[in-house]
Image 1 (cartoon, rainbow, N blue to C red):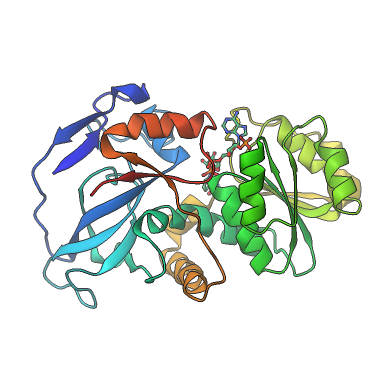
Image 2: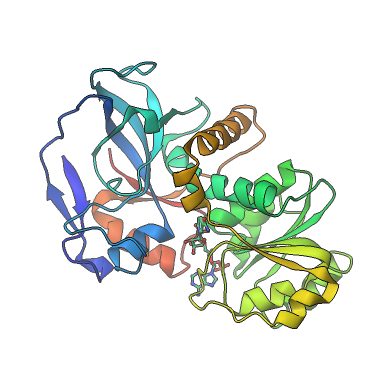
Length: 324
Ligand SMILES: NC(=O)c1ccc[n+]([C@@H]2O[C@H](COP(=O)([O-])OP(=O)(O)OC[C@H]3O[C@@H](n4cnc5c(N)ncnc54)[C@H](OP(=O)(O)O)[C@@H]3O)[C@@H](O)[C@H]2O)c1
């Protein structure tokens, strides 16, 4: 089988595809034929050696995949060869095959394609965990989603609408704003820190109750100023690079709150709750409530290009590798 390997963390373009032996399936494990691997920001951080966890090289990046079960180990119940499943694997996903604990796989509803399923878990789980568990968004509230044409952004729009909110999406380009509208945003605006406050206040009758912020930097401070009384800003990520210095007076004003969202650590330490959350989300897909968009596809040997296009804001929505 072929797998993308990082032999020396640092530069994306040093990733190579190696031929590797097919792994043997052991007790409590399943072997997947991977159809697609979601490409995420965190995968680039691993390859560049910028993530807080530093795997020993050589390693295969890739944190979430979808595929079919090719073989079952002993003591595996409730799964069969041929089942379509997704898994959040952390590492190892940019590969034609993946060995994983049987307990980690989740069956995919018929309506979800393998590429969309491969990109689903991180974005949608983060969105629901942030909006419902961390900032307690309520029906009728107004939500500003930054990076609205990105993976977390598009998922947050759909989830916020499902929770009964009115949504304004902020994105840098027209194609990204169009994608935000297709995902259900009520209104969109350019993602420009110098105009964001006035644009959002004008479009949302004075401001919003919640900000979903996967961007960081100057956008965070501008977005904070769009919050009405008792507004909450969810800090999700820093896709723009810099981490904002927050003016504390802007938090005091109007009794605002800034709330951290570390879904990754929560999911790792609250496995049963994460499984329930993911199953709830997949059920919403099955019911036709959520409509994950199809990702932009790259070949397995284009992993470095896929990661760099993601980092350079070239793609709308999600990115995935074809691993078949
Ligand atoms: N806290 C958590 O648990 C958690 C979970 C998942 C993801 N995250 C983090 O959330 C962030 C976003 O993830 P994502 O999957 O939505 O990523 P993505 O699909 O790449 O979207 C990120 C968006 O950031 C915007 N952006 C603004 N300035 C940028 C810049 N200078 N460089 C690159 N992008 C810029 C881009 O939108 P525009 O071009 O419209 O500006 C882009 O669409 C990442 O930092 C990720 O690590 C955190």
